[in-house]
Each structure stands twice: as C-alpha cells, then as structure tokens.
Image 1 (cartoon, rainbow, N blue to C red):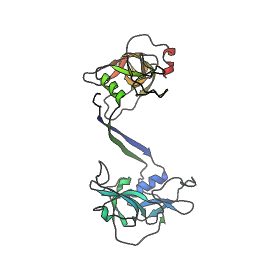
Image 2: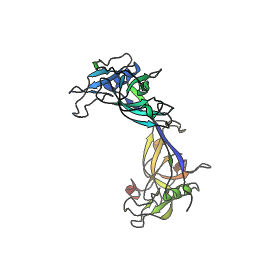
Image 3: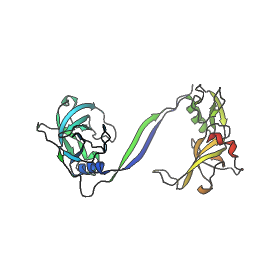
Image 4: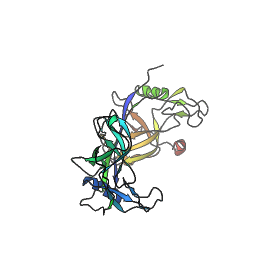
Length: 314
C-alpha cells in the first residue's frame, strides 16, 4: 500500500456585497459608535437588524438605537484563538442581549479566564480605535459592573457618508488527503500520464477517478490510462483577472473529454486566440518542467471532432 498523499490546501476569496438601507445604517452606525436595531410589527427590536421579519416575512425599515451595554445570555470559552479571530489571547464567544434589544448579538468577550464568565454577567462594548463600518468596529465586549439598563429609542438611520458596500475576506485552511483512487491519479500526473478507473458494471471510465461509479454505485479498481489528447466539449471565456494568478485575461477555461474517458475534466486552453476556441476542438496537454499537472491544453491541428462523438459528455 503506497503512502497516503497529504497537502495543505487554502481556499480564499474576497466576498463583496452591497448593502440595503437597514444593513447600511447598522454598519455606518457602528463606525459612529452607535448600535442600531430594527423594530418589528409587534414591537420587538432585533439586533443585528434584518430587512424582513423572520416570523411574518414583513419588510422592516423602522430603526431603533439600543445601548452599548448588555447581558450575556450564553457563552463558550476559546482557549486557542485562530488566525484573524478578534482577539489574539484566549477569549469567550458570547451572545449578548444589548439593553433595549430583544435578540442577542454574537461577538467576543475579553476575560481573564473561563471562571470569570457566566450567563447573566453585565458587559459593554469596547470600540475599535479605528472604525470603518464593519462588525469589527466592535473590538470586543468587556465586563461592566453597572446594573442600569436602557430602553431603545427611535433613530432615523441617517449618517454622513454612509457605508454602502463591504468586502469580507473568506478563507478556509485545511489538510487534504486524497483516497486510493485520487492518489493514483495524482501520482500518474507527476509522470505526465492521466489515469482513470473503469466501472466493472457499466464499463465507463471516470477521470479523475472517484473510487466508485457515481451511476452504478459500485467500487472501481481497474486503472485505465486515457488521453493524452482530448476534445473540448464546453468552455467559458474568463474576463476577470484572479488575484495571485499570473494569467492575462481574457483566457479560456474548458471541459475536455480525454480520449478513452467517459467524464470531461477541466483545463485552460492556450496556444490559440480565445475567440477561436470552439466545441469539438482537438487539444493536447502542455507540461512545464517539474509540474504535477498540465499547465494548459493547446490545439493538436487535427480536424474538429464530430458533435455526436462527445455530445453525451456535455
């Protein structure tokens, strides 16, 4: 049994969204050290605010200001903060019902240890010294001894220079360990070969192999070398340059049915102007020294494949 492959994998992208009037007022308010909620038809104040009542689906627009103090309703201790979490030292995740609100806000509590945290404790907001109109404008909550509470008050939601959109980085770090079938596939790629597995029932060859036939549900083990040439089945033209990707736009990304395979894989098409790529184009892989996968696929110069030859692989 060969050693299992394993490698760190990071999926990261910036998530960009525009804001409606309610979310815009909420985030702009945080920048101005003001916490706003939204009032429902039955008088409840929801913090964070939402644009539609979660019970009645009624559109909500009436804003209300709540206090910067509140009460912990529940909590969980985090002894080992991860990268980009709000605090670098151990802290508590807390749900805090701010005074004047009827729902709780999730954030973090700066406390010396779990013994200092309890349901019902009074806390207040510690504002970030530099605020931009984001939930991180609340640096954290901190213990607060006062028992005084406050009611919500109406607020117009109007501020100078309102925040109308946000960009939030999304990142997932994990270690990927492929199974037997994909390990064989990756090892073959390092030798500039492409292998799939044949289903013992329907006889289809799947590339990349999955270890089981998705149609028949039976295990696959018979390895089949396919390609290296193949046919473009479908494609798209990419016009937006990806961060940290040294490829000039526009370029073409395509589904390619390698000869002998019954499942199309994807790859970049090069060596031809983007507006000349077409369905049925015959292509072959281009490898770079030391690479574990083809850099791109280029035209072979063969006549285009007939549509009937690949229509079942679309």
